[in-house]
Structure formats: structure tokens, C-alpha cells
Image 1 (cartoon, rainbow, N blue to C red):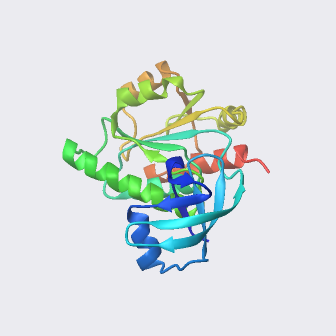
Image 2 (tube, rainbow, N blue to C red):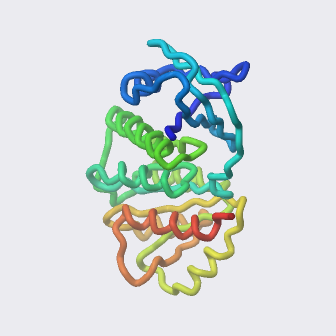
Length: 246
């Protein structure tokens, strides 16, 4: 069953009024007809089963036939701070992070990042990443569309993470898998979690020290060196396993 997202303001009197790009997708790509069923999410814990009621060039009207709380979101908000990888790897990172339950993805420009973007290119990339996040949210039947935020400097990322309950920094120079197990197993449902992943060249030593001073705990992900696009997915998979309920 196809999923779409709507704002609460688009729902009234048992009807959902779909506008914008989704109208073309429903009418001309999926070629849906009155009576067909879709799922609607509004960015909270509720999910609505709807039937197509009417279609026009500007709007698709859906009639709500059922409402449920499926509990598909993780009980903790996980923020993935991903230092910019080269090429198009960030697109894969965003897609897989959304599938694995991340609440938000924050691109970070650190000292050893190969990719450097001016303001115009950064805005274009961010818009593209958010489109990918929306598509991945629909595919994986998320109840929210995780937001990809504007690119932050390393210092801005540390400041942004300051209010999170748990801050983790996988670091190739860290050792002791038993300690990592202990740190991760102590995370409780409901706690907000930040994961800071370095670029291809790794973190600068000063960045590691600054992160520790800001409350980040360095951990190891094993004896093998993971690619930057793999490390975040590994962390999200572990946390999904630990935090998922029912």
C-alpha cells in the first residue's frame, strides 16, 4: 500500500486534501482511481487508511476509513551527524539512515572532509538529500519524514548536540569492545542519541578532544576499519536492535 505525508491542516471533516507534487504522482504515475487505498501520515504517531475519493489536476481528495497507532518509530530520537563524504555517498547515507530509523541527519563539514561546498551548492545538495529522505520514508513506511538539516561546521554540530542525552563518537583509535557494549546497553528508550561519524580521512585529533569536552563518548566498532558510509549504518542497526520494542 502506498504511503503519503500530509500536514494536519490538510485534514478536515474526515477528508485529506493532497496537493503539490503528490497529485501528479497519484494521478499520472500510479494512475490511481477512486476507491483505491493509501496510507497517510502526519508526522506523529497516527497513521490513516484512506480511500481515493476524487482526483483533479490540483488536488486529490482522500476519505479516511481507519486510524491506527502502529508504533513504527523508534522509542528514541537518533540524530546522525555525518561528516561529508566524497561523491554521492551522502545520498546513500541519508537513504539508509531513514530506513533504519534515524530521526534526523545532520551533514557536518570537518577538517578532513574532501567535499567542500559553497552556499549555493550546499543548498542544492540539502534539497536533494531531503527529497531522498522523503522517498525513503515512504518506502520504509515511516510515520515521519526525517529532516536533513543544513550543513554545519564541526563546532556548530557539537553545540547542536549539546542538549542530547547520549552522544557517541565511533573512533578508529579507540579500543575495548566490552566498554562499547556497556555504553550502548545503558541507553534507555526515550533518551535522545547523537552519533558523530567522521569522513574518509577520519577525525582530526583536536576534533576528537573537542568532542570529548562537549560530552561525546568515543567507542569502537570493532577491529576492522569501516568506511564512513558503513559506520553510521552499523551504529543505527545496533541501536535499532537494542531499542526496538515488541
